[in-house]
Image 1 (spheres, rainbow, N blue to C red):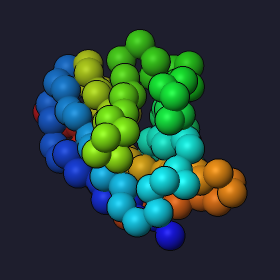
Image 2: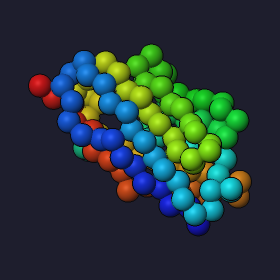
Image 3: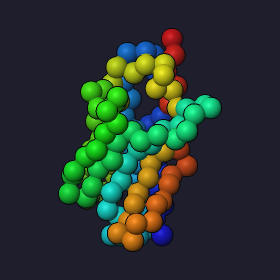
Image 4: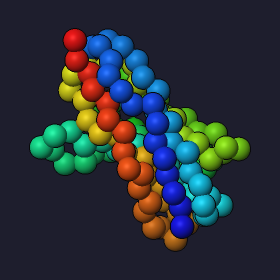
Amino acid sequence: QVQLVESGGGWVQPGGSLRLSCKATGSVFAINRMGWYRQAPGKERELVATITAAGNTDYSDSLKDRFAISRDNSIETVYLQMTSLKPEDTAVYYCKAVDFFRRDHWGQGTQVTVSP
């Protein structure tokens, strides 16, 4: 089993930046792809970005110019650097890991609020 713990969320003014972290524990050897998803109130959960163990990335087209995903395999942690934040980025951000058996593992989420 894989456990994921997100951190780094909070409140930020429009135009600001935040960096989210997601630490994986447990059966980390089985993890292939890790990523970030978000869910705003009243909306479906959507892809933000993912990254494989080899460093291959995939982004939401609408976010790739402002968000950057990275990964440190030595400490089983994935990051999401968010810049030029907008109120519409307000959401709960979830970390997800997909193992080599194609099972999904989710974190509890971290709230990001962008407002004046």
